[in-house]
Amino acid sequence: LTCHEIDPCLVQAYFDGIDDRPGLQKAGIAVLQQLEKWAIVRRLLPRQITLGVEIGDSDGSHIPWGDAHVQLAVCEASPELVRAVVLAANTGQRGSDLVRMGPTDIEVFKGIRGIRVTHTQKVKREVWVPISAELDAVMATWERRPGPFLTQPDGSPWTRDALSRAWRRERDGKPALAPLRLEALQVDPVVAPRCDGGLVIHGLRGTACVRLKRSGATELQIADMIGMSVAMVKHYCKGSVQRENAAAAVIHLDRARTFAERDGSNRS
Image (tube, rainbow, N blue to C red; front, side, top):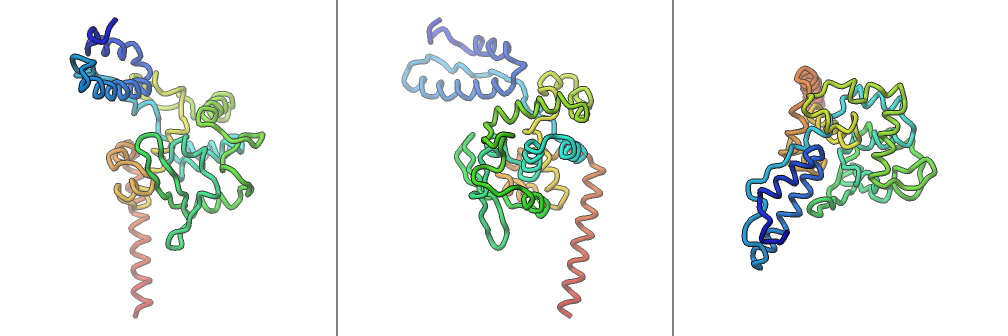
């Protein structure tokens, strides 16, 4: 097979063959599009090879965690994995960023502590993730030591893949964590084959978005706080339960009203 024989039909056939791996599809087509762009202007390809090619939707492969799921993991998982769950649920960062975070990344801005994170998965970008009061209280209990926040039982740092594998073993091996497995979750049967057996660490990005939304943050504010696009924030928040969102909105409004009344009385 030569370059001149490759066409969109063959490329589509290849991606159809790995339709159970949407993440790999997405990475593969991105590489081919860059190759295509480079090769066409040098006359190494006679045509576009990705024109019209369709891949599956990888959004369903990461089920968002609910607050009850997070609490169950915190109560039942091993300490090193509890720390990963808490950090992910409160910062909304990818696993590749979670394993690199450490005390030296903490910066104070306008009196607020936050974690400096350099995203490198797509476009290199540095964001500052504020540390919530809840996360700050938990972090105060962590042993202070050099290196990343997240370490394996022997004290060595995690890699992203090692952390993911350890979580899957924990989730699937402990009876108490059965509610976090696929068979216990209400998942669309079409999406189920891509869900990696249940809740995974990456799904906590959605949890962080929903928590911030319910606390009163706008989608733009959430995007800035976590370091993702507004469109992705909307995607993560669209599946949250309306009744829980409404109740959280009332609590937020009541707090704001109480603060305004207290501020007004102080001024008078």
